[in-house]
Amino acid sequence: MISFGWAIAYRSHLNWRVRSTLGNDVLMSKFGFRATLEKSPEQVAAMFDRVARRYDITNDLLSLWQTRRWRSAVKEVINPKKGDVVLDLAAGTGTSSLPLSATGADVIACDFSVGMLEVGKARQRDSAIAWGFTAGDAMKLPFADSTFDAVTISFGIRNVHDFHKGLAEMLRVTKPGGRLVICEFSHPTSSLFRRFYLGYLMRALPKIAARTSSNPDAYHYLAESIRAWPDQKTFARNIESAGWQKVSWRNFSAGIVAIHQAQKAI
Image 1 (spheres, rainbow, N blue to C red):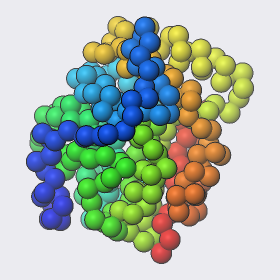
Image 2 (cartoon, helix red, strand yellow):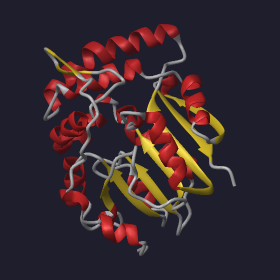
Image 3 (cartoon, one colour):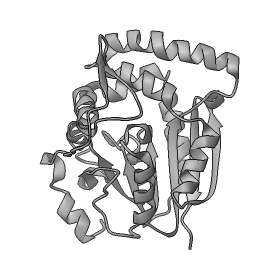
Image 4 (cartoon, rainbow, N blue to C red):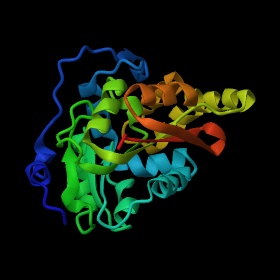
């Protein structure tokens, strides 16, 4: 177990809620949350609090169990070594952190949804990541400069109010030469398949979520935020603009998901 002062200070953060004075730009429709890329952090955090209990099983069902493949791919790209210090942002209940921890790396599972963290801490009480659940905002990370060998975020960068600021914060807390790995829904490479995929997102996914999720309205937000997200090349330029180097990406599942990686200058 690592003994950083910040880790000790933030182990008790499960009773801390993210506060924000940012404007409320998430519109309500007959479906609940209607997504734009201008998000109210408090509303999004509350939304994830409500889906926490059945979040993992719902995601497995909606992705036809592809989430497990994508998590495995993230682990392979990061390739953490024993003793590496890894920050897993938007870690939720810790399912993305467990494969990283299994390599012997010291993993901090950080999320701005206290509800998700509480579920994760209860489920993972006997695992190596149990001590590392930390509440935090990606735009103002509660960690010192140059702390982590790698920073990763899976299916969470869309939910950061200002993801450009979030990318800069990730750079700040990464050690020189350290790596960034982002797994996120993206744009299918085939225009024909993209039309089919968007139809699934906007019509089928919410109906399936209504049967499996503890808060199906959240999946309307999910669908619309995915549709509004920039494509692979545009997002790569966003990462470069934040100061990262050697930016590249790899598509998975015909471009439904892309894993971007980058490095901090030495």
